[in-house]
Image 1 (tube, rainbow, N blue to C red):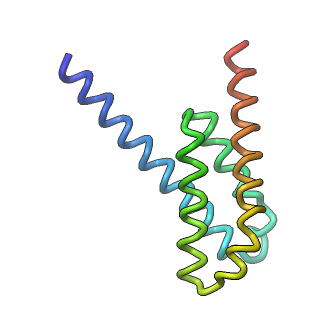
Image 2 (cartoon, one colour):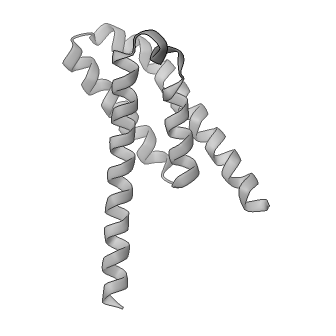
Amino acid sequence: MKKLVKINKSQNNVKYTFIVLSMVVALLNHWISTGFLSTVPIIIIVPFVLRVLFKESKLIIITGICSHIIMALVNGDIALGIVSAPLLIMGIGVGILLGKLVKSIMEEI
């Protein structure tokens, strides 16, 4: 029984690490994107996939906001970070809502 608890704890750690790294990479791509990559809505796609795979909406939102603030400070574009924060929150929210909707439809089937 102890092994199952240990495996479950290990899986939770991997899940949280995956969510955090995915959101950081998505927001890094959002800040640096030029050319073709700027046309792909990564800010919506990544939270959508994370919500379909995991049920950690709060962690996805908190990680997205924290990553956005950190990248704004690192790039020195604090004003752009403040102005684009509502768009970021809206994009993450849309991705999470779509993921929740798809997950509920998949569970009904």
